[in-house]
Every structure is written in C-alpha cells, then in structure tokens.
Image (cartoon, rainbow, N blue to C red; front, side, top):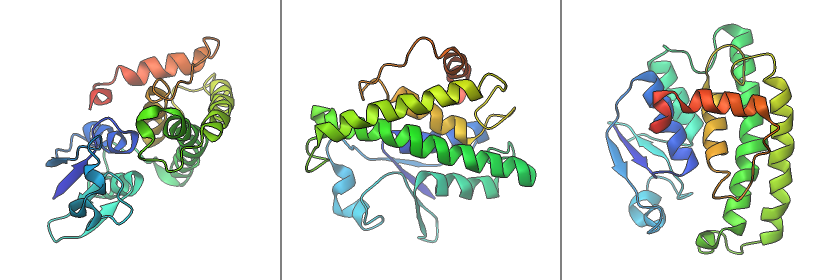
Length: 203
C-alpha cells in the first residue's frame, strides 16, 4: 500500500489528518505539486485526472478522491468513528461533510486557483472575476456555520468527524486565497481553535 501525497494542498491533507486521527500509518510517496509532478506520466497512469491524493493498494487497485480514501480506511478501522454512528449520526455527518465541501472548501479553492499568481499554470484560463465571486460565497456559509455552532461542539454534532477535517483544511486555506474571516464569527473561531489544537491537525 502506498499513498501518493501532495503536501499542504487541502485534499491530500484531509487524508493525512484522517489517518492521524485513526492512528494509521501508511507509506507515503511525496509528489511535488509545485514542480507539476502530479501532471507527469507516473501519476497520470494511476489517476487520469492528475489530482492528489491517490491510494494504491498492494494488489495494484487505485483509489482516488480524498473522501473515498477516508471511507476505505473507516471500513478497515471503524474506531474512532469519523463518519458517524448509527443511521442518524452517519446521515448528519454526510450532510455536513457535503455542505462544508461544497459551500466552503470549493469556493475557497476557486478563489485561490483563480486569483493567486502561482496558479496561472494550473488554471487555464485563470478567471480573476470568478475567484473574487467565490469569496463572499465562502463567507456566507461561514455565517451560517457560526449560527449552527452556537449549540454544539463540532460541525456535525457532539463528536469530531470528517466534516471537521474538511472545515479545518478549508479555513487554513483562506489565507492563501486572501479571504479574511470576520472576527465576529466567534463560534467559528472557538471551533477552529479547538480542532487546530488536536495533534492530528499537524499532519
């Protein structure tokens, strides 16, 4: 088994945090995304979309997409449960994971990819107006999340989950995306500090 990893990029980092929470060690194959190694033939032969992370199993089976990889490890190592417990718990985690991914991580990523000068070779064409249009989308969702976090410790309820992992990597990526988090979102701030203090956040 081998995990092709892309360093500080959000999706590879999601998998590393997930594995750290589970206490799972997987051999890592670093891929230098700055040098565009993820566009090279070695990775493209495993993932034609040329995206990271990529998990290659011992029999040669390849699993792509960060959440699919996390689900694979959840099935192999159910504890601690990061996709929820029981029908309701799993549904709530799925709901919030989807919301955070679509309404926070995606617009943050679009802002970064279409505004940051370093991404000109990645996004062809780079559309700065689209990047700017996504900034208020991310902030609008954070205001909704701030209200939700008034009554619970974590995004999907009382237990840390994959939805919190997605939220953490999205918030950490707001800085290079040049999105300022308003100070008045105190519940988001409290939640972010708590999940950042978990040892897994350094993965």
